[in-house]
Length: 114
Image 1: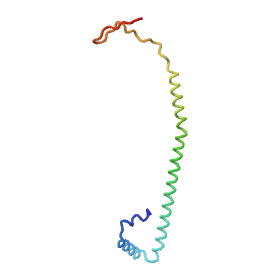
Image 2: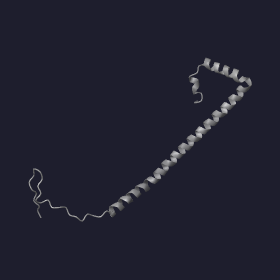
Image 3: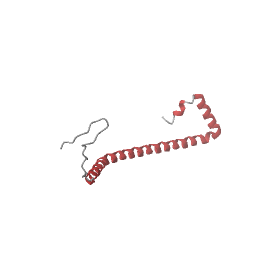
Image 4: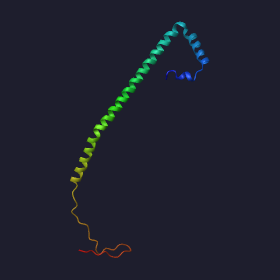
């Protein structure tokens, strides 16, 4: 169907003119050979494009399956890295400074109750 797509733009009279010119140029003996070789070339092109499409779809499916299988392992690895980071971080031994006697702009002094 796609191979005959160009026929939508060519009318009957234009097609007849093209066939007559081809007959004059190539002669009645060569025209069937050219038709056969054109048909073989179109068949090879179609089968090569279908093989490429199958290969492309297979690779996409394999990549999707690989991503689905690796997603849980990646999430576990990220969680493991986060847990290791938290464990390695030393806790602060400094206490916060007392706020007694400090004044803030426009506010009264805060008294610390001990």
